[in-house]
Length: 299
Image 1: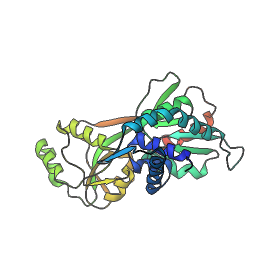
Image 2: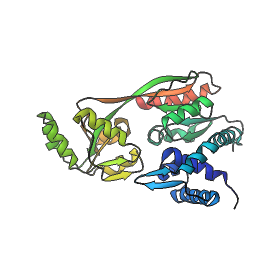
Image 3: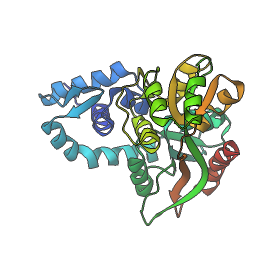
Image 4: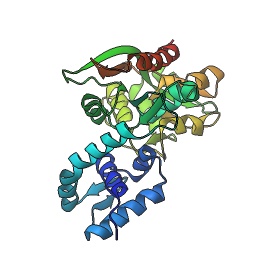
């Protein structure tokens, strides 16, 4: 059996995300393809690399050893691949941008085909994006988190509010009356009886929102775990169900009535979004163009 570099890339991404689905999204391959890469690598090394727990891939002790051994090498190969890959159109610069999938779909996706330069998009966790930005693998990141690397700078450009929304056909009068009468415990109990949507990677917003407003952790599991927050918007548009998501992702649906803004909470939950970039870059013009699209969307 011949060892394939893609097996290591897939293994590294599964290790870092803990998810086959997220790995497939990040690497732009199918989930069966991810599983095939993993099983092929396990066959090659001769031992199991992950235990499959509830909604998470847990690395074995041997997987931890393998990850630490290959990490630097895989990162260097990916960097070389990015910098030396021949473009299909000569004379065009290439910049690499890191952000979450929903931010890309909502803001940048519609402009990609009109750009006069090449773009490579990477999805992942924000700390990893900051590291990739610092070492030159990425040229720009869109992030709600600021790092402390001396080589990087962060420019705020927008705020997102995390809100409770429902489908357009969801009855919310009872909840709204409970909130109006300051019956917060009863309102919490009512919400727990409803249909909920979330993503496997975005439970943190639900937990934070719940704790800020009910002073408790949510002791229920969402009914539907979908691939990303844009999927949530599509699933509940003109239907029933609840979710806690950033308001900018459903601005149009709220305006048209496909979704309802049910509650911003007793304590408004906001995140500042930043452009993260290196202090010295050769792609100032390209980065400025991308930033313009995001500022335009932010209004």
